[in-house]
Length: 537
Image (cartoon, rainbow, N blue to C red):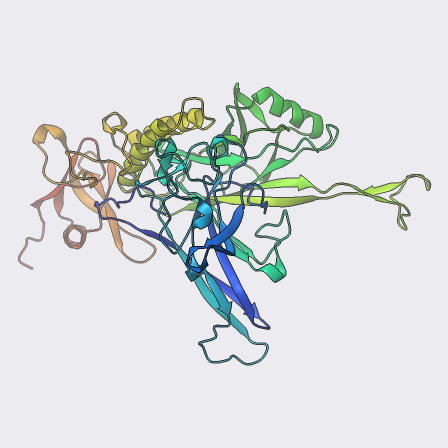
């Protein structure tokens, strides 16, 4: 999903979501699809109609205001920030004029199978498509930062209290959840995408790593939102946990989890109390660290009130290479309440016969995935610059007292380091909802190539020793061995550069490659110096 509204060439980008619903059996009337975006990556996507999955009865204004079907509302847990935002196929109503319950979305209410389609064979599977426009990069003010604190939590809202949707999304890749609402077969409380066939989610965060680049380009930050462990969990019972499944993450990678609302000592004390072997360490007062392995468990302290705004930062080793991709999964674990067995036919060994037996187990509440493709600084720089501009703007939209404020500040510091590591200058990037702009170009991205003065350039002269292609066979760049015996990697996809590079590689021609000093891997010009075979072949 594009959050800035423009791609790196300044073209407008619009986001949409589709879901395909399957039905096998009888006719189903009034099948509804609700689309909600969690404001950040979160493992707390379990079904709760009182908080994140709030709905209201839609009012049919065309039929004398007779109550109609359900319509999704803003979700919130406390009054510090919406937790979920609904999206529709129809235009949004103006929530400063009428309440959100007046929203209609008839395109996402269907009968299956369609009465206008030929009747399917009895018992066969049929499907229908539902969709919405994700207006998450539009500047129109929509909702308040503190919806639960408003006189009317569902609107109409005061025009001076509302914020645009991108100002409320606290992530660069938020979690999209689809709910299939069908009255005869309701979703049970606490269900999630793993236990219910009527909840689907897209909960993946992409954040790339540089290759080879400095260490700052190997820092991979991910924002996430997390509920505290419920106070219903007894103090002598294991609290909820984050479980990090490291997958193919390189050994020796270090993860830092920053929770400004918690003390790191409290988390470590819980870990020491419940874990026989504790792999967690303290980085600072609000940050704990762990090293990649098979699985890492992190206890979540109990409490009430606002969710925990968090930032998990992964430091990859410098040994990662282009075209590698790493995937790790963060899950939330919770215990079912222990069940007492009056009579245990197979009592555990060593227990007294008159001692009540109990059983309990852990289950996955929800999860999100972090995907880390490895690329190169010149490719990563343009979108990272826009990301930095966007989040500098986001920081200005929320009060300094908001729980996300310190998290966004640290995130911006880490993204600034990435921009610098990719060859950019974060100090020249100001806050902008439209991404990085330069020279009043109306939101178009500032390109780093074209002509530069000699004093602004660097030059490498030598011979091409490698030509690089990606997994699809498309030209990606080349490696030059300089006259001093050093190798330098350059990147580009232009067909004319590929033709020239292939010629220089085949004929062992000497070339000079010029780059701008702040973007050392993107050629702005190539000069053919000499060719042993000449140009007439």
